[in-house]
Length: 437
Image (cartoon, rainbow, N blue to C red):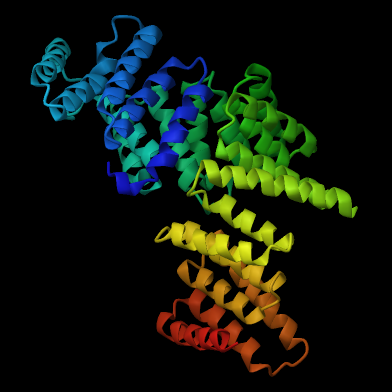
């Protein structure tokens, strides 16, 4: 895994937060210490890397007892690898000898050349390190499940990564994530995080009865787990009846993990919803400032948090801080780089900022078009097309022959119809209009 494929500082903070989030889950803590060791190595802190590997061994033995050599294959391999890079060849050889002993004691369990625990841990490592590695992680989880179909760890990891990448489904039956979450819960009946992920997915299809039952069961069983609290808070905000309850839960989670950018972002979204519920200027302003405060904290803790950045920029605009909002949007664009989903999100929100805060329709159209052109069938592409149609329809209601508005509608049809060369010419014409203005 390459350092340039992730924001290494943000990744380090996230892993350190995980040590608190996992609480009594020793297996998860052991895996996190392994990942921390690799990050420390990348940062040139070899002694700290060794310390984390030792802690990984301790947690694994605490969890599974002394007879857990197979679960230590990856950690022993990491020890050998790290000692080799530190030119400590005697220590390297001692760990290689341990691996040899384990291999001789355990006959291969399948035709695969790699041990199932190795391929499963590889899947988790890829998944945790970078979004760029999600497809590779999926491939590894599938291989691990071919070897050990009943193994809860591999079923859980596979379900979680499917949740991260799944975007467009017409029904719960079409959702691979929902099917795998159900399978993962069967093999991990005590994992309340999986129940909440399933609840959030079911709620997308308005299956609220089952979803709310899962939420209540998870919260009753794990009322102090930050992982559970943050997902319950998200569910309450999006689908529940009480934003105040969501805020209370998230504040509890923040007491355990004060450096979680995710929880600060969720709190900001809750206060944003509260702001929309109140009509008085003083209440609205109070909740606006709370939103801004938590979003500023979120992007400080997690510098590459694109969605928090776009939310913050938009709220800066609402607060009258137009120049500051522009700066954050530009930073978000440079941070998103070649990540299609992130860049689309920035284009969509920047278009809204241009339309509603700067009152510049042509620039708004420019950014909506950029978003649409990148990927018309994603949620951001679809939303951009809706915004573009709304602008065009407004002009056509005043003049049915408005060529600019008709041009916008033509581009939408051409982009969605796949006529790329023609649509690119039209987009260039619109962009030149925006630049002239």
